[in-house]
Image 1 (cartoon, one colour):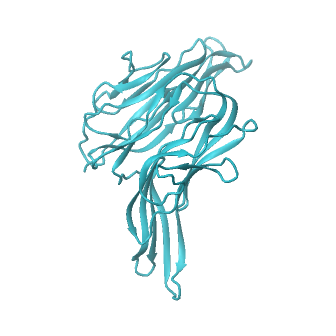
Image 2 (spheres, helix red, strand yellow):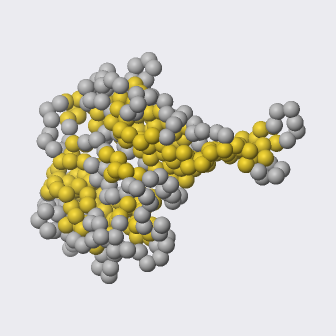
Image 3 (tube, rainbow, N blue to C red):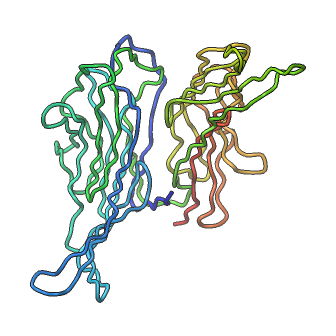
Length: 373
């Protein structure tokens, strides 16, 4: 995955709190995220001449932070004729949308450089109604082409679905052919989860600061089927590990079955919910996240041991829950915080990672890079 280069003078900080469960039933559940890549090179002829130009569109960055380059070059000389380079930073919309809710996100557009051209027109919409339900910025605009940084909010509330498994999507149109698409499905039995999402805030900073900058996210899939022999017998068993869900909300199944009868011999089904760590970690900061572990069902086994750590020092820097545990296998729901502050890096571009070990072979990895300003 390509690295993110931060040219903006602000940082997005996610805030999610653990609240009470509402009795609202029936809602839109986020099931998928997709990035549409607008990268292309288009050949054009300069009007009235035989001179050729290349319009090159490309990007760098990752989910939530993308820098887009849209430039026109003279093919013969390689000179830049016109173009624009702009940065879009956005936060995810709610994972659950219930009738009456308004869709909320934070969105920031910043022009990095420009020659004649300005950033392509952008928008965020939910395909509700004939014309779509658009999100408005603080100036009341539903189409964006000028620099701004604010919360954006849908002009009307979300409506209920008409049939089970009906799909809709929130589309973040970043211009120049780039889009981020969040797909939702209507679940008539959906109720609000124990993690209630609150508006993300944008905290301005006066200048770029030296620190550990988030670059990309990866997920290690622990899905496996392992054959085992029951001790002292010729009977075979299958240990099946699988999951459902996505970033920040996953349900893990780890079960042992008798191959011949299909009977469940032992197993556990557990849910883990977590929030992203900070986008930038400055020396002296403590890493903090929300983390929730819940056992859904169990036969003899308990959830596999979990942990969250930053590869600092010989043994790693672990995050502790309110009971002071750095390894988790019992149900809890709390903020977890690193036992010590983050240290400075030694070399520019040095790499480190926060690893969310979800147990059973599943991991969420947040990669960071030391940047010196």
